[in-house]
Image (cartoon, rainbow over all chains, first blue to last red; front, side, top):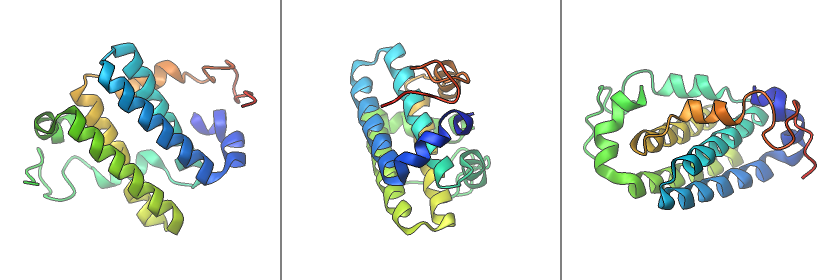
Length: 87
Length: 87
């Protein structure tokens, strides 16, 4: 979905510009976390994931597959579920 | 999935600690983007989304619903698909 919606524009902005937007959105999420207002939080989480998806699109990474490959129902470090890492 | 896997540990770490991990993972993604190695990129994208999911879990936000609510097939600013915002 994000590909169809934003790919033409994200490509023009480039990887570095899109990454910088992602960093800004993560900062906004940090601000929203201090307020603990549900609507603001939903908005900022949505923005972070949208920019993450854009960045994945322009770097040709399949975000969902990358996540499922690494976290396929068990912790990639201790291989257990629930995770039992001690760090 | 992330809830079952990590919720007990993320809850103990708290919102601020989990947010700080997210920020670190976003920085690692930034480093991986400079190398442009596909495997490293997939790994770092997976980590960012895993920590974002953890943060959503402990703040009781439904990440997928939040994203779909805001980006339901059209740009939330210009309401078009593809987006035609000019910023």
